[in-house]
Length: 149
Image 1 (tube, rainbow, N blue to C red):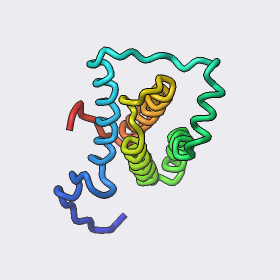
Image 2 (image 1 turned 135 degrees about the vertical axis):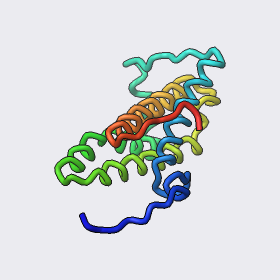
Image 3 (image 1 turned 90 degrees about the vertical axis):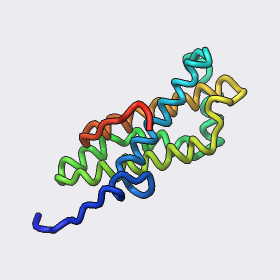
Image 4 (image 1 turned 180 degrees about the vertical axis):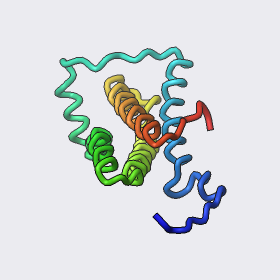
């Protein structure tokens, strides 16, 4: 490539817009949920097959939850596209969009303070899946995630 690029540290480190720190912050936020869970002495209860019908009702009542999970599950598809086209920006855009969706979820649902234990476990499971996918995407992009921001 022969394009000249002007690099601005303030813009690159900003939490606003499509930036690495924005995605890193989503991971830090997700991890803080699990840290708070542990600090409160709350234990996770595994989602069991007997709860499938209830979980399906919950997810069907909230399209945004299905959409978030489906998008998180598409990581490999975006990795393949980025590799085949030699465009890591495809993976970076996926990570940013997943972080955006997670932040919307975080603000829209009371993950830790949810009174219904099954809902709380579903929200925690969604948080865990998204966090794992974001960490993997950032790792592939060569971006580390700090413990706190």
